[in-house]
Image (cartoon, rainbow, N blue to C red; front, side, top):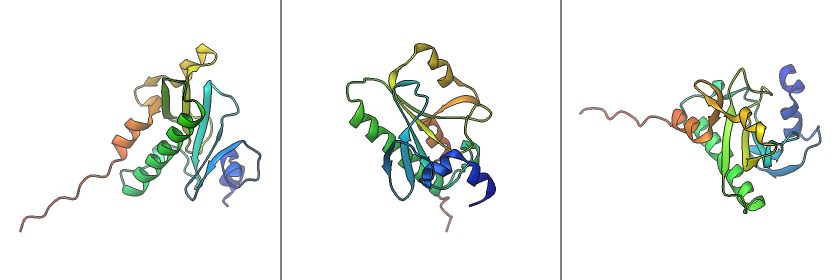
Length: 149
């Protein structure tokens, strides 16, 4: 593990060297409760591989597949744990507004608690909170160009 990864709290959680309330783990991701929840249910889904931020993702099948899987895991967990909620949000903080330099999907079952915490999840251009679906649109691989014969 590289020095920056060894210091990364989310890498430590992924390697199970730091305690966390683990909700899901598989070969690609691990999900756990946010220690400073902003909603009725607030979970984080992170890749096991250290990827610093959304800015490190590219329009390619691997990155699209990873983010899609992260979203599926988050949706499944919130449907299971907060079925009474009627509104959910899924997204990523963009630099410089991300708190940890390890890609992490915020999965929120609303309402926000306390209500002022909604400010942390505002979408403001290329800053702020990036909805997972919008990120998937940016990452979706382009179809191959058909060659003329």
